[in-house]
Structures are given as structure tokens and as C-alpha cells.
Length: 182
Image: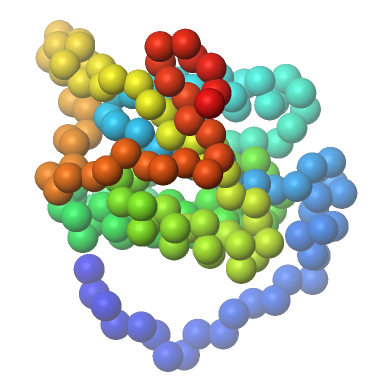
């Protein structure tokens, strides 16, 4: 990744305020950031939440880590440096979508607390609520790998090479043992 910053950028100021977009959607834009190990169920929970919100006539969209890595972030590896960039990109897209009035459900392995904090602060600067949810479930990677080999599906993302601590959550954590928020 190049660290050069362009000097000839002019930020566009929109004629339609976020508050006006919220009137159209009937709710605030928000970023719901689901983090946890590979195979913990982030994507499955995100799909269920998205379905529920749409049944409630709430405008939502999922930013899934695997989907982003097959498009926007296809040029990134799983090195620590590229993991930081992956989360930065996902966070910027999530913030823009929330500014448009969507409930953005992000399901990403985001192992580094500092990266999640950068996204949280970026959202706060734009007055976008940020809710972090740790999916505290054992990884299904072993069973996923077996399933992938038999179905030609892509293998799960590798776990971070550097040790990542369990997130200390200010918001919510979901444990697989009882599937209840803590």
C-alpha cells in the first residue's frame, strides 16, 4: 500500500443533510460492527438481523468481510498491515452508507482494537452511532474447512498471525452457549 496522500482533493459538501435523509428512511443511520473469530457466526447473525430489520421496514445493508475481500479489498492479503487497511476501507464505506441513512451491519474479523477504535472515532466525527458487537462463539473453522473441501467453497479466512485479545465490549457481546446478548 502506498502511503502518499493526494494534495489536490476538495471535499464535496452535500445539499441534502443527513437529518433530511433520516426523515426519508424514518430512522438514523448507524454502524453495527460485528467482530469475532473466523467461523464464529458473524455473517449468519448479520443476515438474520438484516432480514429482521427489513421486515420492520428499516433500511439496512450488510458489509461482509468475505464479500469485501472478493471486490473492494481483493488486493489485500491477511498480513497485519493489510488487515488494518481492510478495516479502514470497510469503516469508510460503512460510515458513508450510514450517512445516507442506512443501518449498516458489518461482519468482519477485525482483530485489532485500535482499528475498531479508528472506525468508531471516524463515525463519531460524522455523528454516526457506532455499536460494536463481539460474537463470542467458538470458531467453526475446522468444520468449515471440511465442508469447503467437499463443496469446492472457499476456505475460511485464516486467523490473525499476531495474537489478538478478546475485545472488551462497551456495547454487546453474543455468546454461542445461550445466544443471548450480554
